Length: 429
Image (cartoon, rainbow, N blue to C red; front, side, top):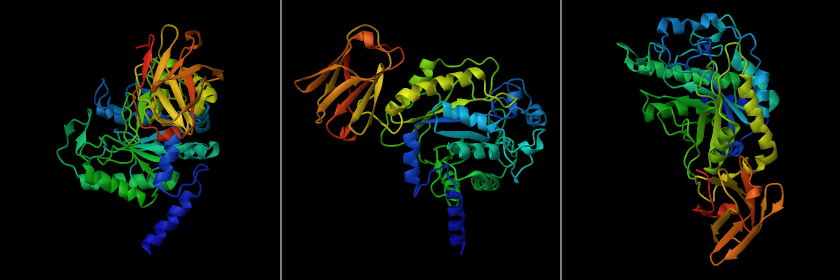
């Protein structure tokens, strides 16, 4: 009877999944990999201070008592979930991951398990409910970042600053139940979800972490989970750097568009080239990019961040076919570029190059090259020389951010094993 009830609950929640239905976790994972690009959002009362979320609790000149009381002033009257989702959509992002609870323990939804939540702020609105509704309206998949550790909860063994202070008394088993209960509450209230993105396990080992994953999958069996519960999860999460070339296990780089996860006054925003190169290099390594914004205390996203994201979206409108639905390779990443592939096409992305007359040498991989063009349709020269193909074109055709060579092969590009590629000329460093 219990299993039947769980099955019925699951079917109810699966019915409204952002226009997507999945018969298995593996199917949802493939959708996520094809999506390639998502928005990370770190936000909470700490935005009133403009310091880093959670890490400035008891540090950065903010006493713990003062930090924990910030929610009493938190009133983001200009928050508009639909505007956030439309920004993500304009950027070409396919999913959003929002911080439901960071290490500071403050909950951004109407939870029944603690009073330390947004409904007890002056704002008194469930931002996660509004964000869930907006995502479903706009066809954007939704997941939640949920801190594994909790430096506010008295049952968690460690506290601030930085989770380096050990409490005299704690109860990790009771805290684990709290974490499980809140996770299920989120899935039931706002799901079905793409992912539960946990972080900083600290006292959690692989057994305890896996127990959390197993528990939430009783409610949503196809939900994705990252590798930060203490257990391995479904994918790796390199932070503030593009991951290495890895085709045997999914991964997702999480990275800030500025210099800080939470909002920072006058934060330095990455250039369009830096932003696009992070995305392209992630795809070329067979990974995703989860790109973070930190909304302001009033609930709006910094205009410069919005502008940069929309510029990325304009590029993706034109060249997204070389990113979405592709796999990394078959040529391993280099200092000057990466490759992606799909069907009978290989897309070679030249990201850094100085000088004229690029010459790219590709080993004979057992599949014949049929045609080579620059993105946009300009044919370029390619010749077969012994056991190699040589591609050459005029350096004047190089583009400032990314020059894409479309290589058409006679077979399936996915059948080519990853290999190194060489280049002659003056590649950028």
